[in-house]
Image (cartoon, rainbow, N blue to C red; front, side, top):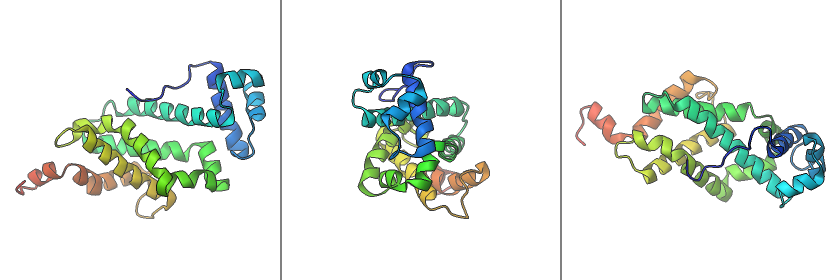
Length: 209
Protein backbone atom coordinates (compact mmCIF):
# COMPACT_ATOMS: atom_id res chain seq x y z
CA UNK A 1 0.00 0.00 0.00
CA UNK A 2 1.41 3.36 -1.02
CA UNK A 3 2.87 5.42 1.79
CA UNK A 4 2.95 2.52 4.21
CA UNK A 5 6.26 1.57 5.91
CA UNK A 6 7.69 -1.88 5.32
CA UNK A 7 8.85 -4.14 8.16
CA UNK A 8 12.59 -4.90 8.39
CA UNK A 9 13.84 -7.82 6.31
CA UNK A 10 13.67 -11.05 8.37
CA UNK A 11 17.04 -11.98 9.83
CA UNK A 12 18.64 -8.67 8.90
CA UNK A 13 20.78 -6.56 11.21
CA UNK A 14 18.07 -3.90 11.03
CA UNK A 15 15.48 -6.35 12.34
CA UNK A 16 17.79 -7.47 15.15
CA UNK A 17 18.43 -3.87 16.17
CA UNK A 18 14.74 -2.93 16.07
CA UNK A 19 13.77 -5.94 18.16
CA UNK A 20 16.66 -5.31 20.58
CA UNK A 21 15.44 -1.73 21.02
CA UNK A 22 11.97 -2.97 21.89
CA UNK A 23 13.38 -5.38 24.48
CA UNK A 24 15.53 -2.66 26.03
CA UNK A 25 12.63 -0.21 26.22
CA UNK A 26 10.39 -2.88 27.74
CA UNK A 27 13.10 -3.49 30.34
CA UNK A 28 14.36 0.03 31.14
CA UNK A 29 12.19 2.54 29.31
CA UNK A 30 13.23 5.13 26.75
CA UNK A 31 15.04 7.54 29.03
CA UNK A 32 17.48 4.91 30.33
CA UNK A 33 18.03 3.01 27.07
CA UNK A 34 21.23 4.00 25.27
CA UNK A 35 22.59 3.21 21.83
CA UNK A 36 25.25 1.06 23.50
CA UNK A 37 22.55 -0.93 25.31
CA UNK A 38 20.79 -1.63 22.04
CA UNK A 39 24.00 -2.60 20.23
CA UNK A 40 24.90 -5.09 22.97
CA UNK A 41 21.38 -6.51 23.03
CA UNK A 42 21.37 -6.91 19.23
CA UNK A 43 24.86 -8.40 19.10
CA UNK A 44 26.17 -5.75 16.71
CA UNK A 45 28.89 -3.18 16.93
CA UNK A 46 28.22 0.47 17.65
CA UNK A 47 29.58 1.34 14.18
CA UNK A 48 27.07 -1.01 12.53
CA UNK A 49 24.19 0.55 14.42
CA UNK A 50 25.22 4.09 13.43
CA UNK A 51 25.74 2.99 9.83
CA UNK A 52 22.16 1.68 9.67
CA UNK A 53 20.72 4.55 11.72
CA UNK A 54 22.89 7.60 11.00
CA UNK A 55 20.72 9.83 13.15
CA UNK A 56 21.58 7.84 16.26
CA UNK A 57 19.07 7.28 19.02
CA UNK A 58 16.30 9.47 17.62
CA UNK A 59 16.52 7.86 14.19
CA UNK A 60 16.52 4.43 15.82
CA UNK A 61 13.36 5.18 17.80
CA UNK A 62 11.64 6.54 14.68
CA UNK A 63 12.57 3.33 12.83
CA UNK A 64 11.17 1.20 15.64
CA UNK A 65 7.83 3.03 15.51
CA UNK A 66 7.70 2.63 11.71
CA UNK A 67 8.57 -1.07 11.95
CA UNK A 68 5.89 -1.72 14.55
CA UNK A 69 3.33 0.14 12.43
CA UNK A 70 4.28 -1.96 9.40
CA UNK A 71 3.97 -5.18 11.40
CA UNK A 72 0.58 -4.09 12.73
CA UNK A 73 -0.82 -3.42 9.27
CA UNK A 74 0.60 -6.70 7.95
CA UNK A 75 -1.29 -8.52 10.71
CA UNK A 76 -4.38 -6.46 9.99
CA UNK A 77 -4.21 -7.33 6.27
CA UNK A 78 -4.31 -11.03 7.13
CA UNK A 79 -7.21 -10.65 9.56
CA UNK A 80 -9.53 -8.39 7.53
CA UNK A 81 -9.26 -10.37 4.29
CA UNK A 82 -12.37 -12.39 5.16
CA UNK A 83 -14.50 -9.55 6.53
CA UNK A 84 -17.98 -9.80 5.04
CA UNK A 85 -19.41 -6.54 6.32
CA UNK A 86 -18.42 -3.12 7.59
CA UNK A 87 -19.30 -4.26 11.10
CA UNK A 88 -16.99 -7.28 10.86
CA UNK A 89 -14.20 -5.11 9.44
CA UNK A 90 -14.42 -2.60 12.28
CA UNK A 91 -14.58 -5.26 14.98
CA UNK A 92 -11.37 -6.77 13.59
CA UNK A 93 -9.62 -3.41 13.19
CA UNK A 94 -10.48 -2.14 16.67
CA UNK A 95 -9.79 -5.51 18.28
CA UNK A 96 -6.39 -5.83 16.60
CA UNK A 97 -5.40 -2.30 17.62
CA UNK A 98 -6.48 -2.85 21.24
CA UNK A 99 -4.80 -6.25 21.44
CA UNK A 100 -1.57 -4.93 19.92
CA UNK A 101 -1.32 -2.17 22.52
CA UNK A 102 -2.35 -4.41 25.43
CA UNK A 103 0.24 -7.06 24.53
CA UNK A 104 3.03 -4.65 23.60
CA UNK A 105 5.60 -4.91 26.40
CA UNK A 106 7.48 -1.73 25.51
CA UNK A 107 4.33 0.36 25.16
CA UNK A 108 2.90 -0.94 28.43
CA UNK A 109 6.16 -0.22 30.28
CA UNK A 110 6.16 3.35 29.01
CA UNK A 111 2.50 3.85 29.85
CA UNK A 112 3.10 2.62 33.40
CA UNK A 113 6.53 4.10 34.14
CA UNK A 114 7.21 6.88 31.62
CA UNK A 115 3.79 8.24 30.62
CA UNK A 116 5.41 11.56 29.77
CA UNK A 117 6.98 9.87 26.72
CA UNK A 118 3.66 8.48 25.45
CA UNK A 119 0.75 10.62 26.57
CA UNK A 120 1.85 13.84 24.82
CA UNK A 121 1.47 11.97 21.53
CA UNK A 122 -2.08 10.91 22.47
CA UNK A 123 -3.33 14.32 23.55
CA UNK A 124 -3.55 17.89 22.27
CA UNK A 125 -1.49 19.11 19.32
CA UNK A 126 0.88 16.15 18.95
CA UNK A 127 -2.04 13.79 18.49
CA UNK A 128 -2.92 15.53 15.23
CA UNK A 129 0.19 14.15 13.52
CA UNK A 130 -0.51 10.66 14.85
CA UNK A 131 -4.12 10.80 13.66
CA UNK A 132 -3.11 12.02 10.20
CA UNK A 133 -0.81 9.03 9.82
CA UNK A 134 -3.44 6.58 11.08
CA UNK A 135 -6.07 8.09 8.78
CA UNK A 136 -3.76 7.87 5.75
CA UNK A 137 -2.83 4.23 6.38
CA UNK A 138 -6.25 3.07 7.54
CA UNK A 139 -8.57 4.75 5.04
CA UNK A 140 -8.09 2.17 2.22
CA UNK A 141 -9.67 -0.48 4.48
CA UNK A 142 -12.76 1.65 5.02
CA UNK A 143 -13.36 3.28 1.64
CA UNK A 144 -15.13 0.32 -0.09
CA UNK A 145 -17.70 0.06 2.70
CA UNK A 146 -18.99 3.64 2.75
CA UNK A 147 -22.30 4.78 1.23
CA UNK A 148 -20.31 6.82 -1.29
CA UNK A 149 -16.74 5.46 -1.48
CA UNK A 150 -14.48 8.45 -0.95
CA UNK A 151 -10.91 8.46 0.36
CA UNK A 152 -11.35 11.75 2.22
CA UNK A 153 -14.51 10.58 3.96
CA UNK A 154 -12.81 7.29 4.82
CA UNK A 155 -9.85 9.15 6.32
CA UNK A 156 -12.19 11.19 8.51
CA UNK A 157 -13.92 7.98 9.56
CA UNK A 158 -10.66 6.29 10.49
CA UNK A 159 -9.58 9.36 12.45
CA UNK A 160 -12.87 9.28 14.38
CA UNK A 161 -12.45 5.58 15.17
CA UNK A 162 -8.85 6.18 16.28
CA UNK A 163 -10.05 8.92 18.64
CA UNK A 164 -12.55 6.47 20.14
CA UNK A 165 -9.88 3.80 20.68
CA UNK A 166 -7.44 6.33 22.18
CA UNK A 167 -10.10 7.71 24.52
CA UNK A 168 -10.85 4.25 25.91
CA UNK A 169 -7.13 3.57 26.16
CA UNK A 170 -6.50 6.69 28.24
CA UNK A 171 -9.74 6.52 30.23
CA UNK A 172 -11.15 2.96 30.37
CA UNK A 173 -14.92 2.59 30.79
CA UNK A 174 -16.79 -0.24 32.54
CA UNK A 175 -19.29 -0.19 29.68
CA UNK A 176 -16.79 -0.89 26.89
CA UNK A 177 -14.11 -3.58 27.01
CA UNK A 178 -11.85 -3.45 23.95
CA UNK A 179 -10.40 -6.83 24.94
CA UNK A 180 -13.79 -8.50 24.36
CA UNK A 181 -15.03 -8.98 20.76
CA UNK A 182 -18.69 -8.93 21.88
CA UNK A 183 -18.19 -5.59 23.62
CA UNK A 184 -16.44 -4.17 20.55
CA UNK A 185 -19.23 -5.44 18.30
CA UNK A 186 -21.89 -3.77 20.47
CA UNK A 187 -19.98 -0.47 20.28
CA UNK A 188 -19.50 -0.81 16.52
CA UNK A 189 -23.09 -1.86 15.78
CA UNK A 190 -24.72 0.73 18.03
CA UNK A 191 -22.64 3.81 17.35
CA UNK A 192 -19.87 3.51 14.77
CA UNK A 193 -21.56 1.86 11.79
CA UNK A 194 -24.61 4.20 11.95
CA UNK A 195 -22.21 7.14 12.10
CA UNK A 196 -20.27 5.98 9.05
CA UNK A 197 -23.23 4.93 6.88
CA UNK A 198 -26.12 7.26 7.76
CA UNK A 199 -27.82 7.00 4.35
CA UNK A 200 -27.71 3.20 4.32
CA UNK A 201 -29.15 3.03 7.82
CA UNK A 202 -31.99 5.42 7.01
CA UNK A 203 -32.91 3.28 4.03
CA UNK A 204 -32.92 0.13 6.14
CA UNK A 205 -35.19 1.84 8.65
CA UNK A 206 -37.55 3.01 5.92
CA UNK A 207 -36.81 6.70 6.43
CA UNK A 208 -36.45 9.13 3.50
CA UNK A 209 -32.89 9.99 2.52
